[in-house]
Image 1 (cartoon, rainbow, N blue to C red):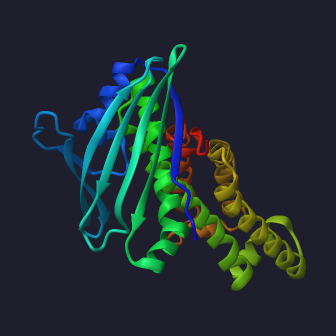
Image 2: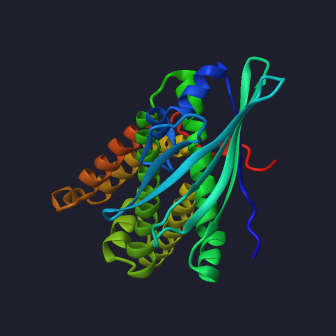
Length: 300
Protein backbone atom coordinates (compact mmCIF):
# COMPACT_ATOMS: atom_id res chain seq x y z
CA UNK A 1 0.00 0.00 0.00
CA UNK A 2 2.01 2.95 -1.34
CA UNK A 3 0.80 6.39 -0.29
CA UNK A 4 1.55 9.47 -2.36
CA UNK A 5 3.20 12.54 -0.79
CA UNK A 6 0.80 15.32 0.19
CA UNK A 7 0.87 18.17 -2.34
CA UNK A 8 -1.00 21.48 -2.03
CA UNK A 9 -0.70 24.58 -4.23
CA UNK A 10 -2.40 27.97 -4.23
CA UNK A 11 -1.85 31.36 -5.87
CA UNK A 12 -1.71 34.31 -3.47
CA UNK A 13 -1.75 37.97 -4.48
CA UNK A 14 0.87 39.16 -2.03
CA UNK A 15 4.37 40.52 -1.75
CA UNK A 16 7.07 37.91 -1.27
CA UNK A 17 8.31 39.32 2.04
CA UNK A 18 4.81 39.47 3.47
CA UNK A 19 4.11 35.84 2.56
CA UNK A 20 7.54 34.78 3.79
CA UNK A 21 6.97 36.44 7.16
CA UNK A 22 3.50 34.90 7.56
CA UNK A 23 4.89 31.41 6.94
CA UNK A 24 8.32 31.63 8.60
CA UNK A 25 7.39 33.61 11.72
CA UNK A 26 6.14 30.95 14.20
CA UNK A 27 3.70 33.30 15.94
CA UNK A 28 2.08 34.12 12.61
CA UNK A 29 2.32 30.59 11.24
CA UNK A 30 0.42 29.02 14.14
CA UNK A 31 -2.47 31.44 13.60
CA UNK A 32 -3.44 30.19 10.13
CA UNK A 33 -2.15 26.60 10.01
CA UNK A 34 -4.86 24.23 11.24
CA UNK A 35 -2.31 21.45 11.73
CA UNK A 36 -0.55 23.20 14.64
CA UNK A 37 -1.77 24.62 17.94
CA UNK A 38 1.58 26.19 18.80
CA UNK A 39 5.05 26.54 17.25
CA UNK A 40 8.10 27.60 19.27
CA UNK A 41 11.50 28.37 17.79
CA UNK A 42 14.48 27.29 19.88
CA UNK A 43 17.61 29.48 20.20
CA UNK A 44 19.51 29.24 16.92
CA UNK A 45 23.19 28.45 16.89
CA UNK A 46 25.43 29.97 14.27
CA UNK A 47 25.66 27.98 11.03
CA UNK A 48 23.12 25.48 12.40
CA UNK A 49 19.56 24.70 11.25
CA UNK A 50 16.69 26.45 12.99
CA UNK A 51 15.15 23.97 15.45
CA UNK A 52 11.58 24.29 16.71
CA UNK A 53 8.94 22.53 18.79
CA UNK A 54 5.29 22.16 17.84
CA UNK A 55 2.11 20.98 19.51
CA UNK A 56 -1.20 19.87 18.01
CA UNK A 57 -4.30 19.46 20.16
CA UNK A 58 -6.33 16.40 19.15
CA UNK A 59 -9.19 16.72 21.65
CA UNK A 60 -10.15 15.12 24.98
CA UNK A 61 -7.26 16.96 26.63
CA UNK A 62 -4.69 15.15 24.47
CA UNK A 63 -2.06 16.71 22.25
CA UNK A 64 0.80 15.61 20.02
CA UNK A 65 4.12 17.35 20.65
CA UNK A 66 6.92 17.13 18.14
CA UNK A 67 10.19 18.60 16.98
CA UNK A 68 11.46 19.92 13.69
CA UNK A 69 14.23 21.82 12.01
CA UNK A 70 14.53 24.04 9.00
CA UNK A 71 17.25 22.20 7.13
CA UNK A 72 17.86 24.93 4.60
CA UNK A 73 16.50 27.72 2.44
CA UNK A 74 17.32 28.44 -1.17
CA UNK A 75 16.70 31.40 -3.44
CA UNK A 76 16.93 30.72 -7.17
CA UNK A 77 17.82 33.07 -10.01
CA UNK A 78 14.11 33.55 -10.83
CA UNK A 79 13.63 34.89 -7.25
CA UNK A 80 11.71 31.79 -6.17
CA UNK A 81 12.43 30.54 -2.67
CA UNK A 82 12.38 27.08 -1.11
CA UNK A 83 12.29 26.21 2.57
CA UNK A 84 12.95 22.59 3.56
CA UNK A 85 11.81 20.99 6.80
CA UNK A 86 12.52 17.83 8.76
CA UNK A 87 9.96 16.96 11.46
CA UNK A 88 8.95 14.16 13.80
CA UNK A 89 7.75 13.14 17.23
CA UNK A 90 8.69 10.63 19.91
CA UNK A 91 5.12 10.26 21.20
CA UNK A 92 3.83 6.72 20.85
CA UNK A 93 0.23 7.80 20.17
CA UNK A 94 1.21 9.78 17.05
CA UNK A 95 0.45 8.25 13.67
CA UNK A 96 3.44 10.19 12.29
CA UNK A 97 6.91 9.15 13.36
CA UNK A 98 9.15 11.24 11.10
CA UNK A 99 8.86 13.16 7.85
CA UNK A 100 10.35 15.66 5.43
CA UNK A 101 8.92 18.33 3.17
CA UNK A 102 9.34 21.75 1.67
CA UNK A 103 7.57 25.00 0.93
CA UNK A 104 8.17 26.76 -2.36
CA UNK A 105 7.44 30.41 -3.18
CA UNK A 106 7.40 31.11 -6.92
CA UNK A 107 6.71 34.67 -8.18
CA UNK A 108 4.21 34.93 -11.06
CA UNK A 109 3.46 38.46 -12.35
CA UNK A 110 1.61 40.17 -9.47
CA UNK A 111 1.12 37.00 -7.42
CA UNK A 112 3.05 34.16 -5.84
CA UNK A 113 2.48 30.47 -6.36
CA UNK A 114 2.81 29.00 -2.89
CA UNK A 115 3.07 25.22 -2.68
CA UNK A 116 4.11 22.44 -0.37
CA UNK A 117 4.92 18.79 -0.63
CA UNK A 118 5.67 16.54 2.32
CA UNK A 119 5.71 12.89 3.24
CA UNK A 120 6.23 10.95 6.45
CA UNK A 121 6.68 7.52 7.97
CA UNK A 122 3.96 6.08 10.20
CA UNK A 123 3.87 4.19 13.47
CA UNK A 124 1.90 1.00 14.22
CA UNK A 125 3.25 -0.90 11.21
CA UNK A 126 0.57 -2.28 8.84
CA UNK A 127 -2.33 -0.96 10.91
CA UNK A 128 -0.78 2.50 10.95
CA UNK A 129 -0.18 2.47 7.20
CA UNK A 130 -3.77 1.37 6.55
CA UNK A 131 -5.24 4.04 8.86
CA UNK A 132 -2.98 6.66 7.31
CA UNK A 133 -3.95 5.71 3.75
CA UNK A 134 -7.67 5.58 4.48
CA UNK A 135 -8.21 8.46 6.93
CA UNK A 136 -5.24 10.37 8.29
CA UNK A 137 -3.40 11.31 5.09
CA UNK A 138 -6.57 12.60 3.33
CA UNK A 139 -7.37 14.55 6.50
CA UNK A 140 -3.88 16.07 6.60
CA UNK A 141 -4.11 17.03 2.93
CA UNK A 142 -7.51 18.64 3.52
CA UNK A 143 -6.26 20.54 6.61
CA UNK A 144 -3.23 21.80 4.67
CA UNK A 145 -5.37 23.00 1.76
CA UNK A 146 -7.92 24.67 4.06
CA UNK A 147 -5.08 26.42 5.91
CA UNK A 148 -3.61 27.69 2.64
CA UNK A 149 -6.96 29.21 1.68
CA UNK A 150 -7.20 30.91 5.09
CA UNK A 151 -3.67 32.27 4.61
CA UNK A 152 -4.64 33.58 1.16
CA UNK A 153 -7.66 35.49 2.51
CA UNK A 154 -5.60 36.84 5.40
CA UNK A 155 -2.95 38.30 3.11
CA UNK A 156 -5.28 39.45 0.33
CA UNK A 157 -8.27 40.72 2.32
CA UNK A 158 -6.86 41.30 5.79
CA UNK A 159 -9.36 39.02 7.50
CA UNK A 160 -7.83 37.32 10.54
CA UNK A 161 -7.52 33.51 10.54
CA UNK A 162 -9.49 33.24 13.80
CA UNK A 163 -12.54 34.95 12.29
CA UNK A 164 -12.28 32.80 9.17
CA UNK A 165 -12.14 29.59 11.18
CA UNK A 166 -15.02 30.78 13.35
CA UNK A 167 -17.11 31.29 10.23
CA UNK A 168 -15.98 27.96 8.76
CA UNK A 169 -16.86 25.83 11.78
CA UNK A 170 -20.09 27.76 12.41
CA UNK A 171 -21.11 27.21 8.79
CA UNK A 172 -20.53 23.46 8.95
CA UNK A 173 -22.21 23.07 12.35
CA UNK A 174 -25.32 24.67 10.85
CA UNK A 175 -25.02 22.46 7.76
CA UNK A 176 -24.94 19.22 9.78
CA UNK A 177 -27.72 20.46 12.07
CA UNK A 178 -30.09 21.06 9.15
CA UNK A 179 -29.07 17.74 7.61
CA UNK A 180 -30.08 16.01 10.85
CA UNK A 181 -33.31 18.03 11.28
CA UNK A 182 -34.62 17.29 7.78
CA UNK A 183 -33.53 13.65 7.93
CA UNK A 184 -35.16 13.10 11.31
CA UNK A 185 -38.39 14.91 10.41
CA UNK A 186 -38.72 12.93 7.20
CA UNK A 187 -37.78 9.57 8.67
CA UNK A 188 -39.28 9.34 12.16
CA UNK A 189 -42.72 11.00 12.26
CA UNK A 190 -43.56 10.51 8.58
CA UNK A 191 -42.15 7.14 7.53
CA UNK A 192 -41.17 5.00 10.52
CA UNK A 193 -43.91 5.89 13.05
CA UNK A 194 -46.37 7.55 10.65
CA UNK A 195 -47.50 9.78 13.51
CA UNK A 196 -51.31 10.26 13.69
CA UNK A 197 -50.91 14.01 14.19
CA UNK A 198 -48.99 14.31 10.91
CA UNK A 199 -51.79 12.53 9.09
CA UNK A 200 -54.49 14.52 10.90
CA UNK A 201 -52.91 17.90 10.10
CA UNK A 202 -52.41 16.98 6.43
CA UNK A 203 -55.95 15.66 6.19
CA UNK A 204 -57.50 18.79 7.74
CA UNK A 205 -55.33 21.25 5.78
CA UNK A 206 -56.04 19.78 2.32
CA UNK A 207 -59.40 18.09 2.99
CA UNK A 208 -58.20 14.63 2.06
CA UNK A 209 -59.26 11.12 2.95
CA UNK A 210 -57.17 9.29 5.53
CA UNK A 211 -55.69 7.04 2.85
CA UNK A 212 -54.67 9.93 0.63
CA UNK A 213 -53.32 11.89 3.59
CA UNK A 214 -51.22 8.89 4.65
CA UNK A 215 -49.74 8.59 1.16
CA UNK A 216 -48.99 12.32 1.01
CA UNK A 217 -47.30 12.28 4.43
CA UNK A 218 -45.07 9.43 3.29
CA UNK A 219 -44.21 11.33 0.09
CA UNK A 220 -43.37 14.45 2.10
CA UNK A 221 -41.17 12.33 4.34
CA UNK A 222 -39.23 11.03 1.35
CA UNK A 223 -38.87 14.58 0.02
CA UNK A 224 -37.48 15.76 3.37
CA UNK A 225 -34.94 12.92 3.40
CA UNK A 226 -33.83 13.88 -0.12
CA UNK A 227 -33.54 17.51 0.99
CA UNK A 228 -31.38 16.45 3.94
CA UNK A 229 -28.98 14.70 1.54
CA UNK A 230 -28.87 17.81 -0.63
CA UNK A 231 -27.58 19.65 2.44
CA UNK A 232 -24.53 17.38 2.38
CA UNK A 233 -23.98 17.15 -1.38
CA UNK A 234 -24.86 20.60 -2.73
CA UNK A 235 -22.01 23.10 -2.56
CA UNK A 236 -23.98 26.36 -2.46
CA UNK A 237 -25.36 26.17 1.08
CA UNK A 238 -26.35 29.85 0.89
CA UNK A 239 -29.07 29.01 -1.63
CA UNK A 240 -30.44 26.30 0.65
CA UNK A 241 -30.49 28.75 3.56
CA UNK A 242 -32.27 31.30 1.39
CA UNK A 243 -34.84 28.66 0.41
CA UNK A 244 -35.44 27.86 4.07
CA UNK A 245 -36.18 31.53 4.76
CA UNK A 246 -39.24 30.96 2.57
CA UNK A 247 -40.04 27.41 3.64
CA UNK A 248 -40.14 27.83 7.42
CA UNK A 249 -42.75 30.66 7.47
CA UNK A 250 -44.91 28.64 5.03
CA UNK A 251 -44.61 25.49 7.14
CA UNK A 252 -45.44 27.46 10.28
CA UNK A 253 -48.58 29.07 8.84
CA UNK A 254 -49.70 25.74 7.33
CA UNK A 255 -49.34 23.96 10.68
CA UNK A 256 -51.28 26.67 12.53
CA UNK A 257 -54.08 26.72 9.95
CA UNK A 258 -54.36 22.93 10.03
CA UNK A 259 -54.27 22.67 13.84
CA UNK A 260 -54.57 26.01 15.69
CA UNK A 261 -54.40 24.28 19.07
CA UNK A 262 -50.90 23.00 18.20
CA UNK A 263 -49.34 26.32 19.22
CA UNK A 264 -50.24 25.57 22.85
CA UNK A 265 -48.25 22.32 22.85
CA UNK A 266 -44.69 22.15 24.22
CA UNK A 267 -42.06 22.37 21.45
CA UNK A 268 -44.82 23.32 19.03
CA UNK A 269 -44.43 24.19 15.31
CA UNK A 270 -44.41 27.93 16.03
CA UNK A 271 -41.42 27.99 18.38
CA UNK A 272 -39.61 25.18 16.55
CA UNK A 273 -39.85 26.81 13.13
CA UNK A 274 -39.04 30.30 14.44
CA UNK A 275 -35.83 28.91 15.95
CA UNK A 276 -34.88 27.27 12.64
CA UNK A 277 -35.82 30.44 10.74
CA UNK A 278 -33.54 32.60 12.91
CA UNK A 279 -30.76 30.03 12.58
CA UNK A 280 -31.18 30.13 8.80
CA UNK A 281 -30.78 33.92 8.85
CA UNK A 282 -27.60 33.58 10.90
CA UNK A 283 -26.29 30.85 8.57
CA UNK A 284 -27.10 32.92 5.49
CA UNK A 285 -24.88 35.79 6.64
CA UNK A 286 -21.92 33.70 7.80
CA UNK A 287 -21.94 31.43 4.73
CA UNK A 288 -20.36 34.03 2.46
CA UNK A 289 -16.67 33.51 1.61
CA UNK A 290 -16.31 30.41 3.76
CA UNK A 291 -12.74 29.03 3.55
CA UNK A 292 -12.50 25.89 1.45
CA UNK A 293 -9.85 23.27 0.71
CA UNK A 294 -11.25 23.18 -2.83
CA UNK A 295 -9.55 26.51 -3.53
CA UNK A 296 -6.21 24.69 -3.74
CA UNK A 297 -4.68 22.46 -6.35
CA UNK A 298 -3.96 19.06 -4.83
CA UNK A 299 -1.91 17.38 -7.58
CA UNK A 300 1.06 18.48 -9.61
